[in-house]
Length: 227
Image (tube, rainbow, N blue to C red):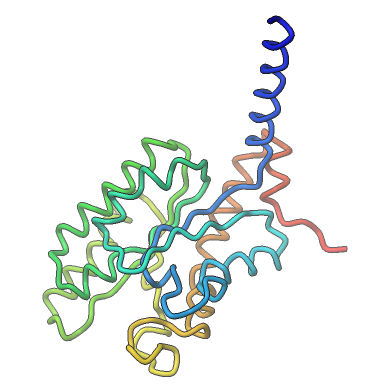
């Protein structure tokens, strides 16, 4: 019995050490843009972010939790489940489907705030980046203004970094979108990754600085010198 208990303790210690020494994880909670609708998952912007991170020698793991058709309400329902795995940075890319459906921006704001609150309740040290979205102009100037202000207000209130418009340079550009005029092509996805990366990189570097008391953890985050 004592031998069994001792063995169990060793296994538990190994598991804890493995979790503590794992590469930092970035989780992208998104909709069809993150999911790469109409494309292979390897062509979606989270995969391109992983390639950028690898090319710059950042030892991070980027997890794609994009789901086609997802709304902010769906994200709020799903956040607890996706946070069952330990993550260090959360990128929220939601709201586009809310706008396309003409949903009340106040509801979108409430859902996004709920996602943030739930995430921080699970992981108080979690870093969050919010990807802003714009509503189609055909919904009218009043709606589009209310919708865009949702992201600005949340970012201002929570001090969370805001990507002003995740589809910057892609939205409305025919050659960068598929036949439906909504979902980006792979070329469009690459541009999205280039837009997102500076914000994500800043959080990774900041996380590295806060990990200086843990040399093993910091080593995963800090760029490695190329040989």
